[in-house]
Amino acid sequence: MILDRLSRDGKVTTNELAALLHVSSETIRRDFLDLEGQGNLKRVHGGAVLSDRKILPEPAFSDRLKTHAGAKMAIGRVAAGLIPPGSTVFVDAGTTTLAFAQEILKHQDLRLITNSIEIAQMVAPYPNLEVLLLGGKPHSEVPATYGELTLSEVDRFLADFAVISPVAYHSTRGATNYALHEAEVARKMIVCSKRCVMLCHAEKIFKESRVAICRPEEIDHLITDGNTDSQLSLPRGEVHVAPFQGAE
Picture (cartoon, rainbow, N blue to C red):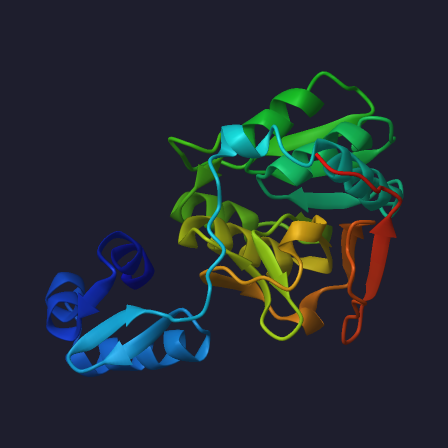
């Protein structure tokens, strides 16, 4: 709620939020302190304002479908190659995970659990794959389900992999999303999985967005494309560079 209000108004006050959320001012101040530590806001007298750090926004889903298509398909192909037969895989909603799902259609004996309506519809006709669509509230912009029901359904499973497509990845802050409801689902999928596979095309690397998904040490595989200039590493995981070079 704090992040949504900040995004809309640019500033929030402690007293306003305390009244709105029916909590004490001290609770709000503690939340401000935590969010400031994550780089999401800056505390000021009586409230908070947006952080001075550059926050990477997320374009509309329809716009994202048209950009970096070649890089996303290359990343999706590498990610699909990491998934062995018999695996259960959480897949969050995104255009890069949609590319991953297109590649996974060639595989056998997999169960996909997703909040993406498009991915569920794509995979459903294939008898070699099983797909489960998580319940919840459909979003007006992204064709996917979100909310408390979605989170509670994720919690019912233990998957072998969580395949996630964030808005940004930074070597110290980790993976981030712009929308809180998207970050919540992605984070819950990671918590309920044995391994995390993060899909990030080159323009997302060394960038930051508003809401934390996970720290770098929680990622087992980070897959990007050949347009990445800088050397990447993970504290305990592996970086894969998909063989793609080009401008789109």
